[in-house]
Image (cartoon, rainbow, N blue to C red; front, side, top):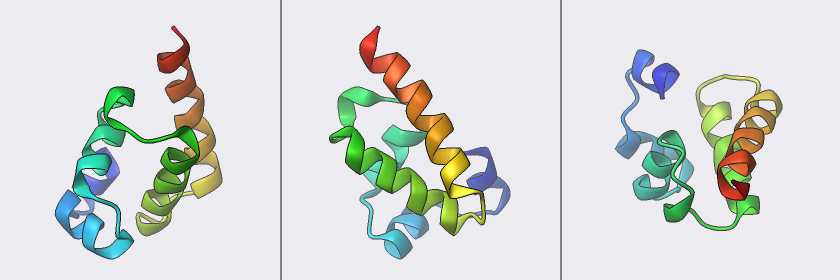
Length: 74
């Protein structure tokens, strides 16, 4: 979220580019598993978001999914 805001890309704009509903983008940024689809989709969305922001998509996705799994298993 911080990188997206730093680069001045709104969730609506990111949604237009990646074809991911802004509802999911916000839920991903807020680490809100109750409003997200299956983990396989979440990982794909995170990869697409990271690529758009010119970040290391594998590193970001691995890190996010580790935190995501910790939230969903506790």
